[in-house]
Image (tube, rainbow, N blue to C red):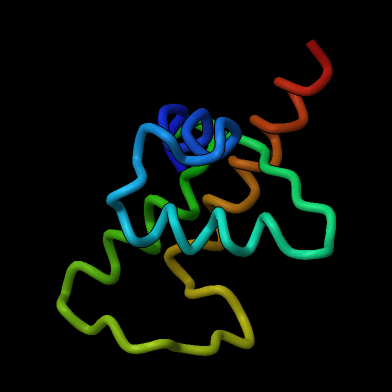
Length: 89
């Protein structure tokens, strides 16, 4: 989620009222539960980047993964190290 989208959601979606996905997220946020968002920079989110590139092949069906794809395993460790270093600063 981009910083702009996160700001729009926190302000009630005033800036992005016409985007269906943000309206849906706002609807979920307004239910009777506690919601919080944490933004992770692109540099520390290699797993999401790798998975999105894998989906560029055109197969957008929902898939259940019991284990991470082999291409993602080394990136998980790198992301974990980056997040640990950034949270300790």
